[in-house]
Image (cartoon, rainbow, N blue to C red; front, side, top):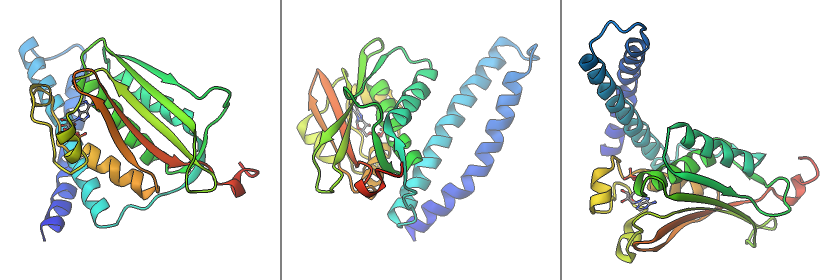
Length: 240
Ligand code: ADP
């Protein structure tokens, strides 16, 4: 009943939040502004809170759908490099102060995978936004694509890693990191907003692809989140 309530409540909350967001955008886009500077600041604050609420509702809905087995993978063959650079561009568009770089595998013109494009973009966006959120402004974030990982599947696996130079994560916190609603209790996390659902959702999505997600960290220096997904299967090699 609790799961059903979360699912129903998040679904019902989505429509009014979308309407509030739409009208706030209209008011903020009205030029010349019919508002005082102070009123404009209030609207900006309302707009940021509405964005946060929208993210929380969408995470709750995703989590409840994943837990009830309602999410299925819509697989297609695509170049992983494109999806990763789209996710990086999306994060950069949010005016971040970090230096984001992508290291593609040498000598691979395309890294073809067989996966759900939107879901892989969702996992990437989550890992990248965490890297930005939990590491200092101005620091570097490196995304690496490694297409030489041997896997149980005939086609092998591709490994994607996101490394940041933030506070890192202690071994005891790593144990719980991918559980829903878990947030590390320290000053960096307390000052950043979040629901503690992003990594649990990412784990479920990666596992639906038959992949694995994990983190390695040197506390005080860096965190590296990595996940694997299957390469395009050999029988589709000739058709793509
Ligand atoms: P949220 O970011 O909404 O809190 P997540 O599930 O994405 O939820 O992350 C869970 C927790 O893991 C975060 O609250 C934070 O404490 C920790 N965390 C995630 N990514 C990083 C990172 N790159 N560096 C340090 N801590 C992190």
